Amino acid sequence: MSECKTYYLTTPINYVNDVPHIGHAYTTIIADTIARYARLKGIDTFFLTGTDEHGQKIEEAAKKRGKSSQEYADEISSKFKALWDEFEISYDKFIRTTDEYHKKGVQKAFLQMYKKGDIYKDYYEGHYCVSCESFVAPSQLVNDELCPDCGKPTRIIKEESYFFRLSKYQEKILKWLKEKKPILPEAKANEVIRFVEEGLKDLSITRTSFEWGVKLPKEINDPKHVVYVWLDALFNYLTALGYGSEDESLIKKYWPAKLHIVGKDILKFHAVYWPAFLMSIGYELPKVIAAHGWWTRDGEKMSKSKGNVINPKEVANAYGLENFRYFMLREVPFGADGDFSEKALIDRINNDLGNDLGNLLNRIIGMAYKYFDGKITSKNIEKYFANELNSAREIVKSLEKTYLWKMQIHKFLEELWKVLSIGNKAIDTYKPWELMKNNEEEKAAALIGLIANLLAIVAVNLHAIMPKTTQKIALALGFEINSESFSKIMQDFLLEDFVIQKIPPLFPKIEAPLMKKVEIKEEKPINLITIDEFFKTELKIGKVIEAEEVKKSKKLLRLEVDLGEGKTRQIIAGIKEFYKPEELVNTYVCVVANLKPAKLMGMMSEGMLLGAKDKNGFSLIRPEKEVEIGTPIK
Ligand code: MSP
Image 1 (cartoon, rainbow, N blue to C red):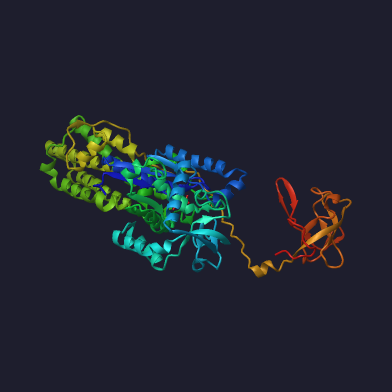
Image 2 (tube, protein in one colour):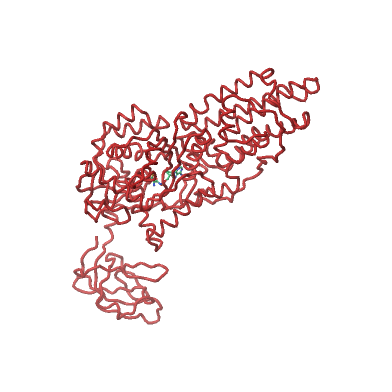
């Protein structure tokens, strides 16, 4: 990877049904780190991020808020963009799937696959999870009904659909997965390989049950259908470079993507569907698909209803953006799930950053001034400390290839900290104050020079994760971090003589948690019932024959309701504030017909009307068309 001329990398595009949280920030910060590292190496880099804005989930979320889908998508998409701007994420392009050029690109791909014979029309019937925008195979359902990924109930959908011949690509995908090994961490590849080996079914790639999506190309002339949100979304990686437009120069320059970063939940879409689509339109496949794990909070899954979702802005405001970046990348092995706790974050800041890095810098600043008027020299390091310097160089050699490009960023940092530890140990072992006492000034100066150089190695390598902090370290050490200084330091050149600049401590000790405590609400379990339990309630269509106010009651009306039983029933209903008696006569209502009769203000009530109450008032539930009286409701 380090040899390549261009480097195109992407994050997943985030759904706009939710505001940004720590999970989104994690993916994006990893990508930003890799992009910054590649640029520092002088590689021509293109970093893409954006928002995924179509689909039923978003249509429904917008409706719930009384907004149009577009208005709602605009609002949330801009929140993502604003956060990435505030976090100084160094993206080159922010794509939105509602952008016209993207929609055109999706239509072009669809048509190309259709013309090739990879798309055909049929019917689909299956369990669909709206939340994940995905059909679930019967064998994967939990309790025959729930989605295995999010635990929510699926819906059975039967609809006309266009299908993509995924099965046709099964063998080619397997070969690619096995030969090219594009998935990182490699352990995750086995799951995907097993999934493909179990057999790939053709994929339903259009929907007719909602409208918020990319329309089929006009050449196909089937306006009922919109493109399945995953096909739409995955193509963002190509449309962002101009696929579907006149100008394909960016595609020529940057495709294939060197890296798609994804969460483990969406690996299948990227490692199976996406390559199949690309094979169908004749494009090269991405080089690496790296799947990270999930974040929990204090050991618990984050969810809106528990109120324990972490707002990345809040963490960054409390602890500093760069410290937060360091923590996320250091704390969790790439691919594993991680837990966010303030204690762990504080420990990382106080120990790794404060003690190991910050103190080392402060110590040499102090000693350089005390003994040498702030002057540093790299002369004589090899003479006195060749072992230390060589051990550090050994570590540096494997940093990139073994760790960084393999997404083992936590290991990359662990290794880098070994360089700091060489420095800290050298001070403890050789004690510059004693060297000075013993008139070994030359050796003391070389020791301080060694440490300055070790810190320079750490600073340039840490730069992609903590850009501003490391620039301050470099300033103290008399250089600026850029592609030249990076390559010079990485090629074993030592810093030139310079005068150290004093800077304030970079990582003041954190004594107590700085974020507001969250109270974790217990998630309300969905109280699931069986269909038999549901049918214990007899619901029927009735017609109101008579209606009058109950005197002395503010709330009650007395109704005579015909349920087709030969005689009417008396129902006392608490709807006086919402309906006048004369409005009700001769109208249809839905009645719970097997409630035990109860007395209300001395009158027997032999049933209950169904209705819905919200802040705007009360509405009776009524059949949409005329229905025979007494018809059961099922
Ligand atoms: N829209 C799709 C991606 C389409 S890419 C062509 C999607 N969006 S998402 O908003 O639901 O998720 C975006 C990313 O955030 C995913 O990689 C997902 O894994 C990640 N995370 C969401 N919650 C997460 C955690 N709690 N922890 C870590 N990452 C998680 O999927």
